[in-house]
Length: 601
Image 1: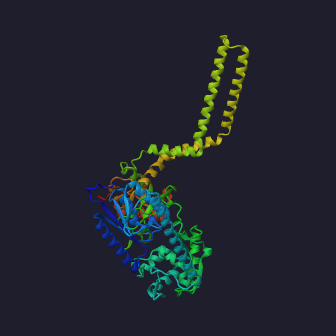
Image 2: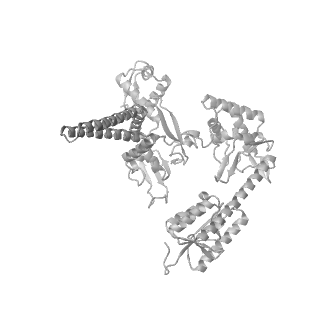
Image 3: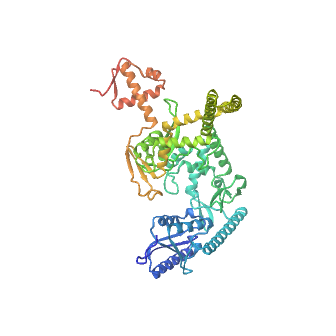
């Protein structure tokens, strides 16, 4: 909403350049200063400045541009000041969207290079601005095509190897690729250990004990080790053209392996080709033994959960990973979230993590109970969500339509039967002649017969619909169990920045300025006690041991193992732990004593 003539207009400045090169930084600073001078000259109030050095072809990746749109929605300014139209963007579709938002919110756009306001409501202005946006986009498209072609030609000729400063084992000096001796020693040991059949986790622990670190000064992760072993760069073969930038989709596209370009001897080899092949064969054999045919590429996990990337360990700040397995006690499938630092380093040691494992079902239930009053999240009615879901499924499966057709035919048959009864009544009262009665009754009878045949045909061909109705009922029951609750919780999780897990509580931190929320949601601290599946099993086994000792104080460890169908060594470890915790103790010596449950008096 524009201000009155007596109020000072609020203006914001938007400045952009394509790169962060030194020459462009100077141009960007000059652009900002010119915009500030324009606002002062016009007598407007400077409300904010939005500055970024990114391409104008991808609006979604421009954080300052997105902030400009959000502030427009919240009425934080009246005028946007820019140098010229191509500084704002070079994408035709996004330009027309911006013009529409500008018109809806009642804001104005001032081009200080032209010394005029842009008027989106005038047809000729829209036409000219659209042509300018198309020309700017076409310029960016042609530039992108030229860069891609030049880059591909360099890859084919093998003139230069694209090597980042984050490539472990190598460094660049004066555009020349050199081997980093200390890191190269760690790389050689990775390949040797892998050839011997060791896994990534064990290799990581061994390298840590020997003092090797990654580029951040931390222990080398098992994922990094697997990527290094799979990379042919370490035997001197550079692989190029693995990705290319698609201008239309505005993202990097992974090329098929058939189009990759290989250059042998492009960089100095850290390991010889024989060692590289042996290490990769050993890794393939390990994968085969584990039931996997190939390495899973990053981002291809099929069982992706909305909680992925949001659960953070409160102790070491590492992400929690989703782990699936079977309970040894019941054989049922179970899902737990475990600290990634624990998975790679264990609980003990300086880099280990002793935080708890989190059962997914328990976590969902805790978030559901704690977030029932959250707006637009867990506060939704569970029954309403179930009914909406079933309505959508009914329309997809056609169950609702089949039911309507049955009811319609039934009503039509009843109506025809009533007409026949009324016609007979008119005959008996002498109002209708017998000839007319016979004629009309025959027509009605034929109509009833025809409708009944349609109904019978519909019922005979409706066996599939009946099965789908049964499916819907099964889905309804499953939704009532936990699926609806899970879906509602996942909807609320979308509003969270992350969830920190501690041994005795979890802290839910919500996103600030979440779209659609009138106010920021307050963070939640939820007291809770998590038990991992291993702890649950251990506690059950301990209780069973104590129960058997109560029933038969002279029972032996072998008899307990046979009764519980467990390994004898496992039962002995459990008994030893219970003795250290003073929960049980043995009276007597050898096989002539008995067990006492409870603390020793």
